[in-house]
Image 1 (cartoon, rainbow, N blue to C red):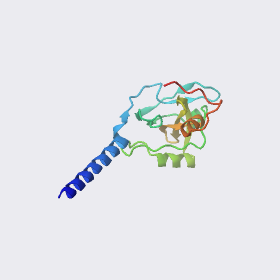
Image 2: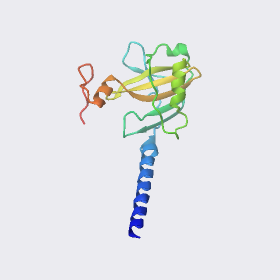
Image 3: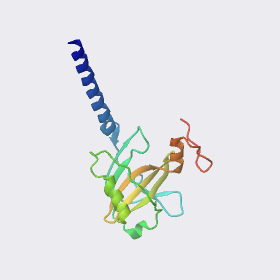
Image 4: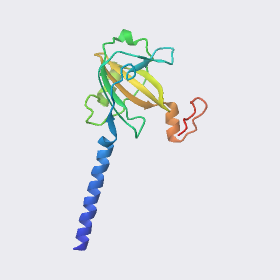
Length: 173
């Protein structure tokens, strides 16, 4: 009888721990980001290092303090492809996935739109966190998406490779 009770306790504990880890990973660390007009959606103009805000509506965003690449956002804009031609494009950008409950952001659909040319990716902000750039994609129908992606310095810093002189110094903790 003691063995059965111990086995039940272990199974229930494992199930509770698994459910807790799932909740923390998918829901627990995320929080909604309040819109800050003029700061949320910015793009780097060709030939400059200063991002310029663009007009947008219907802004929704989530973030988490546990990782610098968990930021995701959705918005709508009236800018045309001609208006967007003044901003720095990003080639071969891959949107990162978002939790399933963040309905407006579908990484697979965004990636398909980028590959087919229905969307264009732009540099939002370089080194928004050390080694992390903010990427903004805008579709031809005015839907926009934002995510953070590791840049070359970030990839080197997080895989243990020597960063080198091309990268800015790491911030002190």
